[in-house]
Image 1 (spheres, one colour):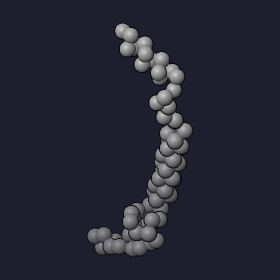
Image 2: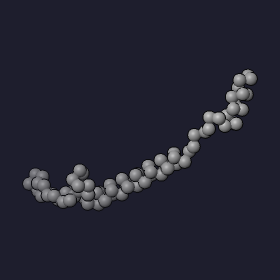
Image 3: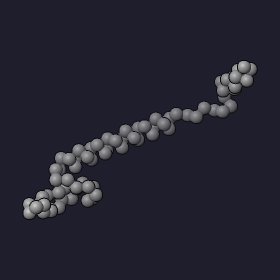
Image 4: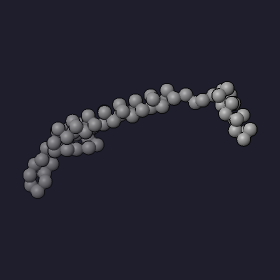
Length: 74
């Protein structure tokens, strides 16, 4: 989106790539903002994928039972 406003009598062209939520007089800053936003979303998604891969240990596993037995003997 593009709009023009007057600041102290001078016409300034403003650009928005997010349907008017944010505005800038520099179209390159809008592109950079979009790229940063997309990169951060991808990084966040990868982080959640790694979290999903982590399995909770089985509460009835042999290793855990052995640890509990050895602690109980102390």
